[in-house]
Image (spheres, rainbow, N blue to C red):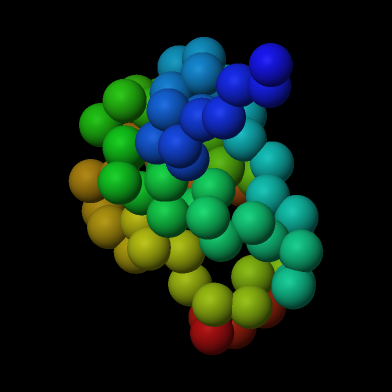
Length: 78
């Protein structure tokens, strides 16, 4: 029998301190982004790696964010 997880349960299966790669453009899994934002306190010292973002991440502009942003694409902010 397949096990179904909520997004909050699924993101907590990501080990703390890992690099989390988000797709680019329309391929960014926004359910994952929302789950990461809701559970940000769980992700101490984790890195978000990404290319082009179509919209700002909900946690990217917070100076106290637990996520380190690593962008492979440099341009003006959206």
